[in-house]
Image (cartoon, rainbow, N blue to C red; front, side, top):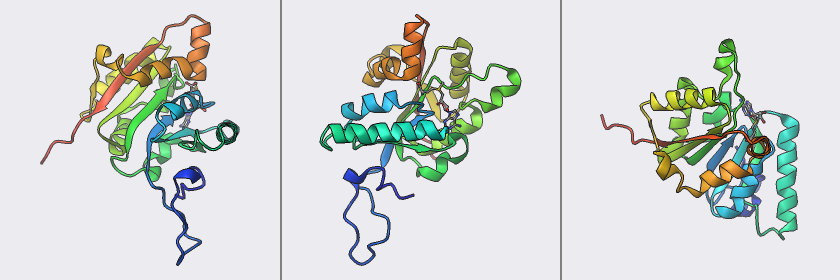
Length: 216
Ligand code: SAM
């Protein structure tokens, strides 16, 4: 994966001996927004966490392109001084997450207003499941956090059950979660979050911490 085209301000100089080889980044991507939609969370978080590289994963091609172009425009409007740490790629996060990130690379994963897939026979399409939670555990470092939010109470319960029953995660108590500034951003800045706000709907938040693996 050549990340330098997504984060050019964080790419090292091209090698003199191998000028065509991909330029390394000075730091790794560490925050991921799964199913980022139109990128509201990324645009809001990028200036708040300017030293962390963040990436949106979005399955719809035209939406991905919209987000990437918006990031380029924001970089230009800010004289190249802001939004250099955000990018978006088209990817099916259910299939390719471990292809993009190394073990324990990430510090935060956001899962904001995922598609609810209400019918029981469609539950396997939900992006929280025992198998996928193991992939999230693989790419998250111990102490890293999965942030979830939804307006569908049954989906909230599903996500809580699946993370609670996974040995690599523990739920962060709500009073502690509320102290995390990212929670407020997640509530207010995603496009779905704004829609729910307009409709005066409820938002269910749950955070889960990646535990240390037991020593064998
Ligand atoms: N997170 C955004 C927000 O809160 O405004 C968008 C929420 S929208 C309801 C769900 C998004 O997840 C859609 O943009 C959809 O295309 C994307 N999505 C669904 N399945 C996905 C997958 N397997 N990989 C990547 N993105 C996916």
